[in-house]
Amino acid sequence: MAIDWDRRHCARKGHVTYAPDDPRLRVRLHSQTAVGEAWRCLRCGDFVLGEPHGSGPAGDAPLVPRGKVLRDLFILRFLAIERAVRGVFIVLVAVAVWKFSNSQDAVRRLFNEYLDTFRPVFRHFHYDLDHSPVVGSIQKAFGYKHSTLLLVAGLLLAYALIELVEAVGLWYAKRWAEYLTVVATAAFLPLEIYELTEKVSYLKIVTLVLNILAVLYIALAKRLFGLRGGRKAFDEERQSASLLEVEESAGVEPSLP
Image (cartoon, rainbow, N blue to C red; front, side, top):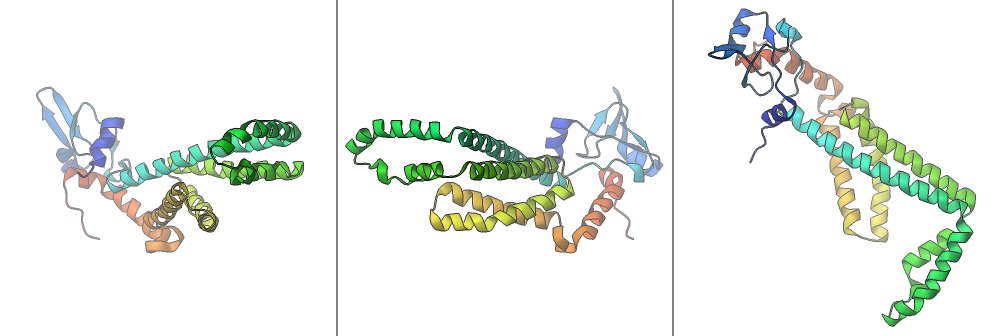
């Protein structure tokens, strides 16, 4: 079933009405009912009782996101939430690394004590902890210098900051955030592919596919880097929608240039 993005948005955020000065358009947007006057919503086209939200020349009508624009905004906000969650998680990891760097010896001793305790239990199930990749990775981390761990924590925080900045920019549909998301995401794709050559997992595959789709969608849909006419075509598309908003809502065929 196709989603009616216009009515869906109006149901959540409310209608937007406007009274143009042009009598020809005004009469198409206005209706007198038994319970009062009604004005046609510039987004979904339904008539709404009450005074219009604004009035003036048709060219000054508010730019109301509709149809494909609303769908794009929904996808961008979904990506923004994903970036925000990832950013918060990376911050927590960075804090954990920083705390570990300040108490490395104490954590190593505690880990070895628990390892000695659980080694017989795992051996009973024919699992050798001494040759476990996870245990080996943790023990390897104990050998890192304090300065190295601080550097790792700093890099993680920088990466988290990029993710959070992307999240805010995408939520408000900022064009600079779209560029940042495409560049930052594409830069990490080779690393994600390399990790798959080391060890394949469903999570890594899903993450890689989502990131590739996000890069392609934003670059093509938003006409970034000169694609599909670039910024000029993007601005013309939005400007055209702005100038014809009232005419389209009124059911008037737009005049040819």
